[in-house]
Length: 314
Image 1 (cartoon, rainbow, N blue to C red):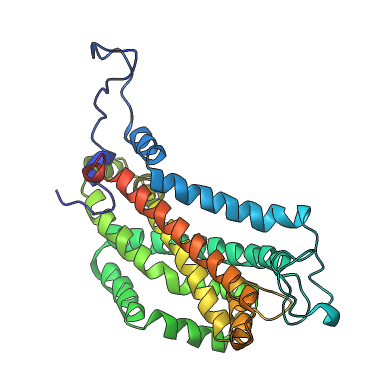
Image 2 (cartoon, rainbow, N blue to C red):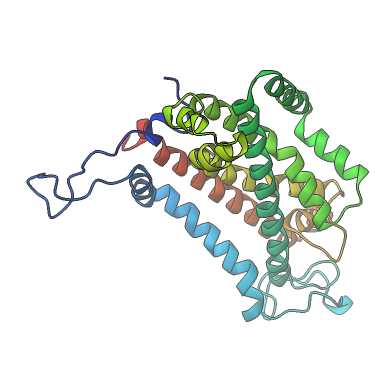
């Protein structure tokens, strides 16, 4: 039986073996067997890179959403008297070209970047999961048509596709979320389809068909729940990709217009003053983007390793 590199399909149906735990030195089997999900969770918790990724994500969320409650700044009215001030007393990271405190600006921009990244990833995961599951489960001409649509869209370079959509619609936070979600579901659909092609041949799916369950109920109740692992891994990568795409759009001037702000927009504005030596308008936003993207990628890699039994304890 074939398996997907991100998820061992056999682990979804193979009964968990008794595991010798502390307190059971004889290995008598009196301790309950650990389920595949609990084993994966334990493996994830013992992965140092996963914990680093989680710690960075938590810090970024606290910095962006709880930081403004502690560090109060005015991010609405401009202050021409305090433009381009270097880091110092009262402004730990200086001010920008219109007098906004850069540290406070980073917090507000982080809210927008994280919200767009998480929302776009959620849309991509939901659409891609249902598209791939229905395509593989129904099969036949439905599968051919749905996957040819995916192939056609994948053939278009992602950045070019995003630029085209962003130029057609009116830029706003909501439209950018849907644009990024629309271009990000394709890989998820392919991954889920490959997994469902294996799952649909298993006995419990055949038994559900024999009991008269509808195809939609089988997909939602039996198929989708067994691809949660692969979807969870892909979701972390989609968040990172969405944050990078948002930064790219803002860098090219197609991001959400003011008063909305994000790390990519701050980086773009700061680059206009790179030859003036205003480094505090460039590096903080760039560091936030890099740290957040790396954190989600670390979490995604660790989740993949935890769910794939062949990669555990390697």
